[in-house]
Length: 398
Ligand SMILES: Nc1ncnc2c1ncn2[C@@H]1O[C@H](COP(=O)(O)OP(=O)(O)OP(=O)(O)O)[C@@H](O)[C@H]1O
Ligand SMILES: [Mg+2]
Image (cartoon, rainbow, N blue to C red):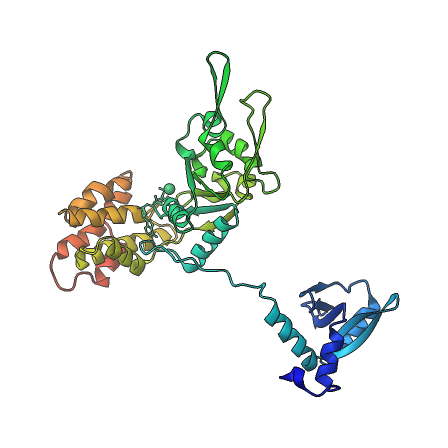
C-alpha cells in the first residue's frame, strides 16, 4: 500500500534511497554505556570502536530516534540520517522476503518417555546437526533409552557401544589384525559407525570407560579433527568421521558420584553436557500409568510416594540415604505388582538390596524398611499416608 503512495512522498523516497545503502546503522548503548551499532542490512554488529567520527554520528542518531545510512559517494563513504519510522518499511519488507530465521522444529516426543520439551528439542537438534552431546545423571533415569528413541524418531541409524563393559578397547574401537595366509585387518564396528554419514553413535557409560578408550576417542570427538588413526593396521591409515555423525554419550554421574572426579576434563569439554531430568512424583505416576495402564492406582500412588520420600531424603543435607530409586526400578516394581507381588515382597526383592545394611540399626536399609512399612501396615485404610507418619520417620530412632 505504501509503495503506491505518490512519487516524492517521504516514505517512498526513503525506501528507494535506502536500497543503495551499504549499511544502515542502528545505535544503542551497551551495559557499560558505550555506543554500539547493529547493521540492519546484514543484522550483524557493526564495530565502531576505533572510529570516533562514526561513534558521534551513531550517538546523534540514537538521540534523535534515527539510523545512520552509509552509502558510496565517489571513492568515499557518505552518510545520512534516516528516520526510524521510514526505515521501518524497508525493514519489514526485508523480513518478509528473507525466510532465513526459522524457529527450530520440534520433533514429536515419544509417548512413553518423559523428558522436558527443552531437552528433547536440544537432543534432536544435536543429532540433526551431527553434534556431540553428553547425558549425565543417576542410574536408571533413561539416559540410554532416550538416545534410541530420538534416533528412531529422526529415522537415523544408531550404533551402540557400551564403553563400560569393553575390556579390549583397541580391538573394539579400532580393529583386529589376524595372521592367516598373510596379515589381515578387520575393522571394528566403531569404524563402520563413524564412516556412516548422519548416523548416531551412542557411547554408553563413557564414565566407566578405561582411559585408553578416552585417548582413542579424543581426536575423533574433537570437532576440528574428527579423525581416527587405525594404528593397528599396516601404515596406520587415518579414517575421517563421516559428515553428520553425532556422538551422544552417557555418564552415570549422580548423587553418589561427583562429575569432576569421574571424568577427564578434556573429554567432557568435547561434548555439550546436559543433565537428565529427575522425574517428580506426578511424572513418575504418569509414566507408570502409561507403561502399565492396568496398575492399581493405589499401588501406583504408594510406589511413587515411596520413591518421592526417598528422593527428598537424598536431597537433604547430611542425608541418611545415598541414592534415590532409579526410574528403572520403579517400573520393575510396577510390573511386579501387575504380576501379583505385593509392595512388601517387591521391596524385599528389588528395593532393599539396593541399600547398604552397613551400620546396623542406623543403616540405609533399615531406613528404607521403616519407610516401606508405613505403606504396608496401612493396608487398605482409606487415608493411606499422613504427614505425621513421615514426620515420625524423619526422627526415627530404633
Ligand atoms: N523419564 C523416563 N521416561 C520413560 N522411561 C524411563 C524414563 N527414565 C527411565 N526410563 C526407563 O527406565 C529404564 C532404564 O532406562 P535407561 O537404561 O535408559 O537408564 P540409564 O540412565 O541409561 O541408566 P544407567 O545409568 O544405569 O545406564 C528404561 O526401561 C527406560 O525406558
Ligand atoms: Mg544407560
